[in-house]
Image (cartoon, rainbow, N blue to C red; front, side, top):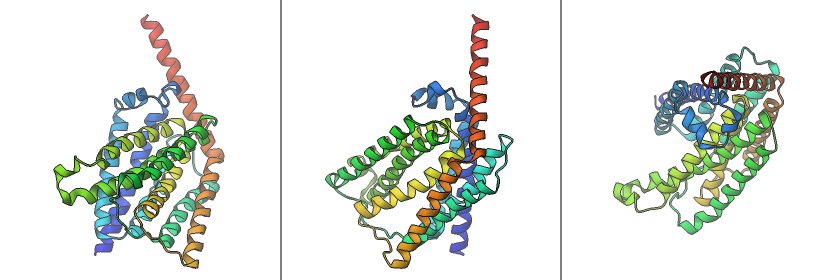
Length: 307
């Protein structure tokens, strides 16, 4: 019964994430390009009803994830949550009057299968999330460098590659958020007031805001198929890397486990590259850009008429 509750909760979490991603990306894609990487983008999105509903669904998803993890192991929950790709990407494409072909479906399945195989093979075990600040500094610097590299890559790219680069940067920040959240939760037994005397919750808030900001920009820059697979694959990898390197968590190192992890990573990369170069995804990108330009022209005409 516990496994059943965990599995159902994980699937519901995935469905909420799928709907959330579709709603947020649809709203962000309609915003002008000159709002990219600015706070104005988030301010304007907060006025969009669909985007606000998407945020609410994301919060609901976290609740289902917590329920799933309380009844079942991570290696069961994480793959089921990531199955949201099987719902989100087809729905996002369908809203543009397009359909996924065999190539795109194979790429989506490869991403989901790669994450599932990699997580089951690695089977990460918990460590000690509370560490001195000096121990955190190399990890914080490392994540900052990787985030900057993702943004630098995105700056010189266009289309799905730009969205993927920003999504990579956002997912790295969200992976750090997961580690900080784990540390903050571990501090709870010390007392609610004691938490405010530690640095982890404050950095958690800052990193969460940064991650959310980058994710919205990734949605604005390109189709869901270009950003979501990158985020869903990068976030757990960063979280596991921080867990192993910082918290002392362990993963399986047997030959068969390493082979399974390698196979999972290979499937992940193949699926992401397949979606990134997909004609359907690139066509969706052109439709989004055309709609954005039409909205900008209409807004300009209205302003001139009022003047």
